[in-house]
Length: 133
Length: 119
Image 1 (cartoon, each protein chain N blue to C red):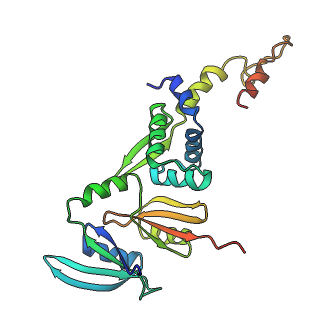
Image 2: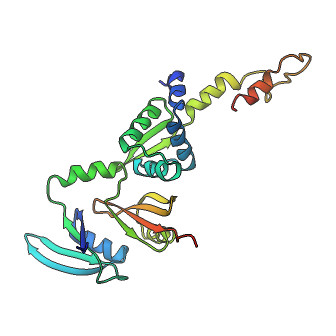
Image 3: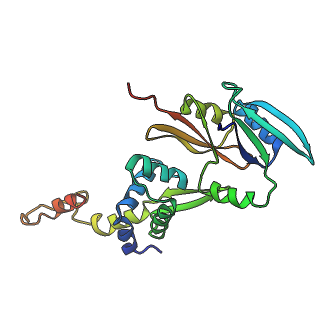
């Protein structure tokens, strides 16, 4: 068994598509019209185009809003992406106008930061400290 | 209105003091960040609910202010109640910064006692 896809609910697929590609730097993998205004829209990392896909799923279900509102109020991220250098990404994304609810900080063996994806989710970016030699 | 007894009660718990330490390093944290700091830096494996309750006690004592900004809640350190304690017991005539307390009265170790009070 392999994890080949995970998903986040997004308020607006078009806006999410732009954020996840233009700002975060992912690449579109699938973009299929499903009718009724919904798309099967997935992105992948350019560093691993055959790797795990992220599905940007419409947030229309009535359960989504209360679920996300409660988590977001407490600053809890709904997905995590690995980056080589959290501090550098923080600088790069802040310059592009991205809002962070948590600036980079060392949390044990990882350094993390949390950003707002503008589509209803908080996303954690993380860099694992190199294993001690 | 903050009651001084609430301040001492809030400060009596080591987890709550650690929360204040972490907010001193960076004020304006989400519950998620605070919990992460307590777990990874202090080995405090309390549940989010428990930390949330500690924050309620600190907020009732006026030591933490919770502000909703957009969709997020951030927790800020408020040292106001601690300043009230300083004014009440430490910042008085006869303390080192205001007078010449040792003049002619050798048996009063008062100023030194005050200086050591924080130990």
